[in-house]
Amino acid sequence: MVSKSKNAVTENCLSLGTPKQNNMGTGRPEIYTDKLADEFCARLSTSNKGMHSICKAADMPSYRTVFKWINDKKLGFSHKYAQAKELQAEFMRDEIIEISDESSNDTIETESGKKIANNEWMQRSKLRVETRKWLMSKMAPKGFGDSSKLDISVVKDLPIFSDPK
Image (tube, rainbow, N blue to C red; front, top):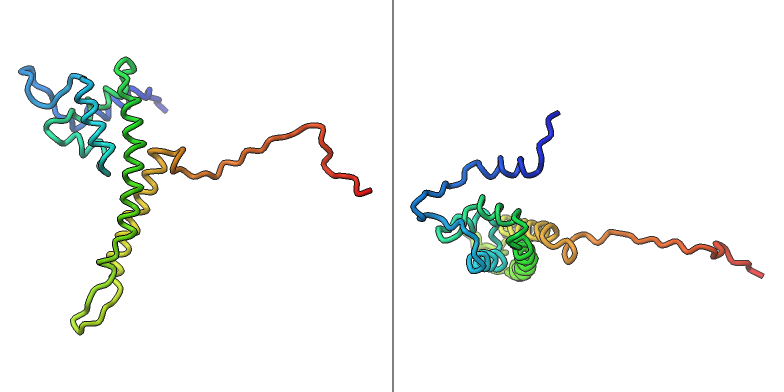
């Protein structure tokens, strides 16, 4: 079995379907600037959109460029990106509350005027909440991940059973 390094795999994935820059200096921004990085992170942290969707905007860098920024340790962008993802999890938490509280479409009226449960709407809302919860657990595992870790400390020289005398 042939093993590829993480960077080789990333470069291979990034080369697929990404727009090319021309030599005229037009097109998508590619050069890292704090202003552009801050704008990218602001859009990411205040929406439920992923990097792919944000990178579709003409004034944003390509998906490939953002991956280059994340992997370039000298830029310090990976820290900004990580913070933006944690803030995005907070944004999604607020969305979950809104989705859960929205009940205007929970019932529909039949032709005879009878109100019945709109199961399709309720299932879609449930899916939206569950999807956001899963994403949040991956974006910010400390705050929203499963907390099923058990810490067992062993204390030496203590009797296991006490003498009932």
